[in-house]
Image (cartoon, rainbow, N blue to C red):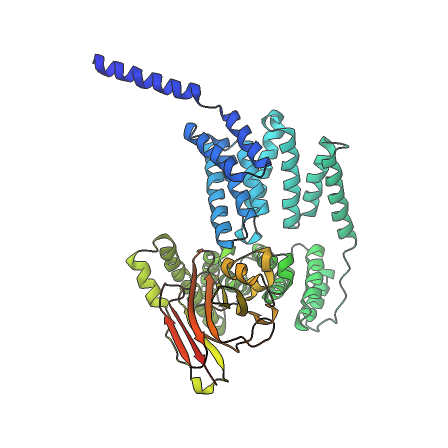
Length: 543
């Protein structure tokens, strides 16, 4: 018994000494902040890692670690790395909030990240809630957050509301800064934002009246007349004009489910357009339109929940919209509601078809989860083998020679079509030409690097002509006319053919490449490695 007592005392004094010589939490945080301000994020994260070793249950340490991990995500041009760091950042911030749900630093930092990440991640609404909670806490206990971070909270809340289109709330948030920090640089910046918002709202052009249809809806009201005019603009394909008209209609009558329905359909049409040069300025352009469209469908169903046509439209959109809207389960409920309603046989048949697509997508999501979480398992390999498409053969006699045929398979299907690039290098690895690149990567260029190996090699040189819509799982064949990016015929010799694919959100990535001799004789090279580009055949056909 005496021996146990002595051992316990020794352990107690050892722990006491460790605590005595460990730096305080504030010392760790100050050191990490100093490193971060000197652009030394790795060092800052190293300090925080040491701090968590001493204080493993401290919410604020997790909050700073999550924030700085997120800042690292924003510094990298590697899309895969950015996604991984962003995911890790939110895990750490969630941990910080779970340890102390009233910690304003944890809430502020998670709100900051939620506002700053791309809209398609669906974090904005949660970020607004975090920032609102932070404001509530500091309104009761101002000393819980520094004045600098209080200003930051209101500024972020204004930015978040602006992104949501809640202009009055955004202005109110920035007006709070003007009130609590008068004559400061921050107040001046907030005032500038307010004036810009008010000026934009004032200069918003009135919608032009389209020729009304004879079968107008709600003809007894201004809103009804606007809906009729908007439908005509929609029919003519002028979706920008239709959107303005329908937005005016819902402003005139916020209880019009029909107006919200048509506004949702119009915004969905605007989002159908493929990637173009606008994506370099706003990489969230299409995902923002998707969210806006669905918000209007939700509002329409909220106003008329028993309308089977509305439920069919929202259900169909929930099936076809990208996975990040998180509307698939809602879509299945909507479509089942239609089946239980008194509707025509033709609508029932369309509903059954859409339910089939919905369950197909749901089933595929389970397979994707296996491939991500258990990528080395026998089950994952079975999935790869199941989805891998058959390989077709090309007829060389039908090709214009000389040329190089690049024949490959994309063997995996994620929630979204992957980004893919095919390019040529000489034997020393110098860039020669790009044969194909997916639309997002080609238009976004260095704004958001999704294909890091292609981006590093090509530096986005002369790619406009070969940027095209994304290809998905299947067998693909491309030909190269043996010209470099300047349009000149290459010299004979050895060349490297590269095919890179990057999937999202699974973050799967593969580069397949082979060397081929372009010379006096026809040649063929074949590699079969990996699960994402399981087959690559390159064939040189001479004259």
